[in-house]
Image (cartoon, rainbow, N blue to C red; front, side, top):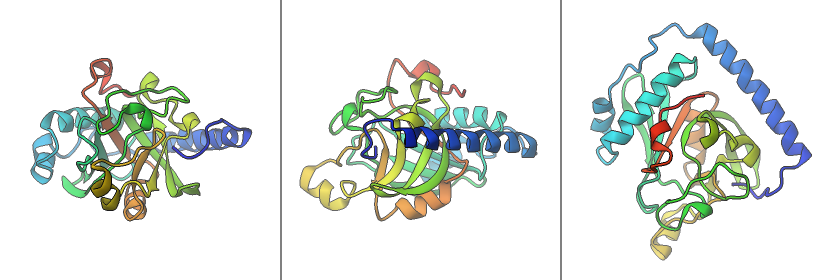
Amino acid sequence: MQNLKKFTFTSFIVVLLTASTTMTYQAEKHNEVTTSNQSPVTAAQLEADAPTLNHKVISLALAAYNKARQKGYDNKGILSIVDFSLPSYDKSLWVFNINDGKLLYNTYVAHGEGSGETIATHFSNQSGSDASSLGLYLTGQTYYGHDGLAMRLIGLSGKYNDNALSRDVVMHGAWYVSQTFLDENHRLGRSWGCLAVSKKVIGPITHSIKNGTLIYAYANDPAWLPASTYVA
């Protein structure tokens, strides 16, 4: 999370503008969707390019993706998957081109300080928790903030992540997501709830997934799993 612990008036204006943009985007996509509502690829096709990604996680992510597609989301045919059940020293972010099933990126991503140390075990949608949130996100615009280039996230999973905008939960680059930090600490550093990636990859990744693609954040959390494919 960026270094903004308090929700200022300026943040409020940003949220209103972003929400307005999102609503406009959704309306446009509902009118533009002409393809099938189902993903053109299967879980097995994605798994072939990502053998370290659990089949169950892929299946749940595709189920959520298809529900979102039925609602008119998905601008570029790109699905990103974060598996928070993996330790932070594993590469737990995958970005797929859903049109052909090809893997675009597999890289490290940090979880929130409030979620745990090496492995994320606690998740929250509450401001001040500094924890990661689970569920499906719609990507928004990029901007430059305290940590440099960042990308806004809009939570689509109701009470599990719908405070992402007001919490200023975004994707950004971080110095503590690096091989040097990993070698010295045997884990990545932690964010304030954001999806933090290496500063070396934040540019290419956000360029590929910004403005209307979907990110699915998973964990083996019994409180969330029954609603893991819910899309608001």
